[in-house]
Length: 320
Image 1 (cartoon, rainbow, N blue to C red):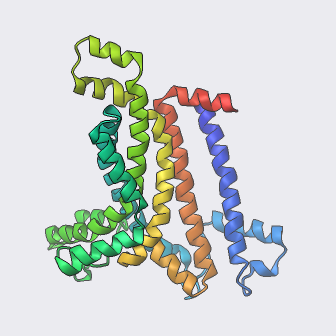
Image 2: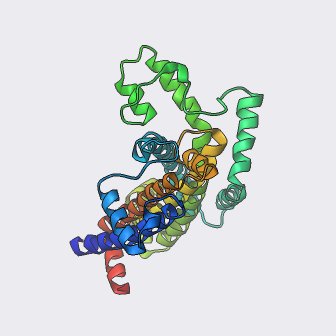
Image 3: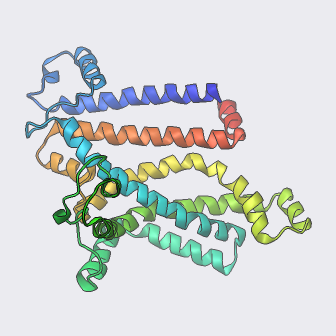
């Protein structure tokens, strides 16, 4: 496991260096950039030293990019966390059910709904939800992260955590308001990973159900639920855990669209504003931040899958 982790870490470092080259070239698009006045490799090494010191540069508005990033990035991470959690809560039971009853009416219905929701454009779904739940029914707020009248002190950057650890006089109302603001963007952002988890788990469960040890467990008198919990999920989940990192990557991409529609004050809205003002320093910082999270998600999902299923490590070594 140690050698496997070291190899994954080396791959992460190499990919991260390539990512810094992309960020460096974005900064060089600015004709007034210091790096644009230097030779390519000399400027890149200086750029790396600057990054290692935690300095992402100064934005076009004259503010340190690191400070701005620390304000918007937790909002995106909070939204992605709840979206992925919702995807797991919905995807695992429905994917398991479809895999166990493959070819049945339940499987056909789940697969059809999954295909339909996956085919819907995310911006169309978001606009439709705003029209129904905000404008027509008036149940949920149209945009924002929470009502600014609550004045929640920023400690961690995660709104729910900040209000829970604070001594806010209207804490319960603030929590309710944050949840109401989270509902629609979370649902929209969770659609893509939910459909993928259902599809992946359906195929994995169906493959496990065809194995002889499942038939042997049934002959021992175990109930259907015991077989599913003790044998099916135990063997069906580990092979798809490394693929969760890909779903997180997809969510980070879709988060930019979701945040722009719901005016969510995250890195997506921040990047779009930077692009409109041609603020290349801010753009490269956003690219580095999002790319680093995607890389870390893939590394951790691979390591988690390898830790749970030693067979994954053996297959990885065989490919090498």
